[in-house]
Length: 289
Image (cartoon, rainbow, N blue to C red; front, side, top):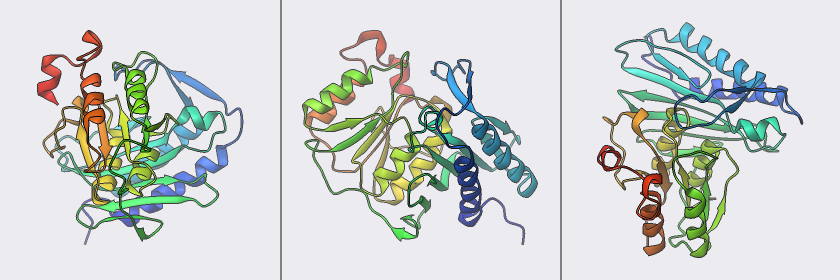
């Protein structure tokens, strides 16, 4: 019987091939171009030959094996109007790090059914022992085949938190980072969001924040973090729902359920603009989230 959409076996195989390409191109002073602002809140971002090669490989695989599935890649897509399933991926999440020879980028891929992520893979092929996180909705999450759970550390003091932000992004997460560090948290910005999702799911990080609204990384993160027992929230503290328009998400927060307290709440208030006026969310944005 023909499969309706890629299963975890398919996603793992694609991720492994993507990892082979990443390793082939990974070296110091990787040549790159710069993309123009794409309208998603990002300033010019780098593009390497590896990004293009991986995106082309995945897109060709989806078109050949699942012609009825919608395909959304960061560097190229193929729309199928009315498709029940969507496959989305980021060929290299963390291109800034990749092009400078820093070994923190990852490949990520997810399958959505009617806008709800149902399975995904995040793959780090550059570590001395490659790491592959995967999850199936309702089936738990794993790292290299072993079941994983989020951290049991429930306070901000000594929590490990990763946040991605950049010049010109809408939210002043630099100030948020200061507030979190003031509460005793260790905040990092290694510029690889999907990688953060895997680390949250396997308990190395307590939380990750992202001030963007793209689907390529967040869909893969959501399944794995939630299946590992974590929580994936919008800025408005609402749980993600299957009917949500992914293109409208302004910020995503993956964290463990009991990471709460005044400092965390104050940090969310900070992002929402209560101390930064126009840098925060408008009333319409708050309703949308």
